[in-house]
Amino acid sequence: MKKARYLPLLLGSLLLTVLSGCKEETPQLSLNILPDNVTMEVGETRTLPFEVQSPVYLSGRNCLVKNADVVHVHSDLDDALTVEALCEGETTVTLEVAYQGSKASDSVDILVVPPSEGG
Image 1 (cartoon, helix red, strand yellow):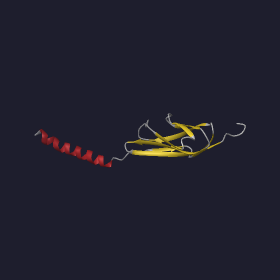
Image 2 (tube, rainbow, N blue to C red):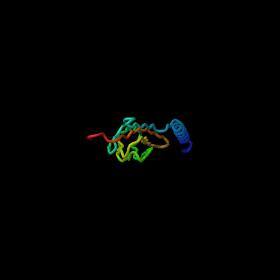
Image 3 (tube, rainbow, N blue to C red):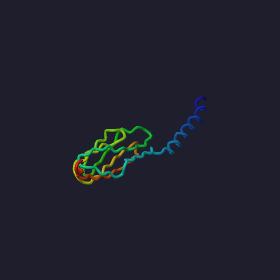
Image 4 (cartoon, rainbow, N blue to C red):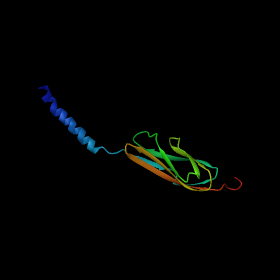
């Protein structure tokens, strides 16, 4: 008799769980590196801030560097990339974050020029 009393409650709870699961969306992530384009001189080190909007703290990131011989990138700060210009050239640095199947990325184009005279 007690089982019959709880059956409608159990079925209602199960139905609510199933319906709630159908509405679940992947977490919204956004990533923005500031600025989009940078000009640096050979030997210069610069900190480029980025903003991550995420439902949770994201400690893992992936940093991809096109023409890695032009710059060296450290991504050990929580909200910035440290870029060191090694030689003249052009490069693109892309930062990626991911959480539960949702991904976000942003890139910055960097032009490295010779050091200025008298600097």
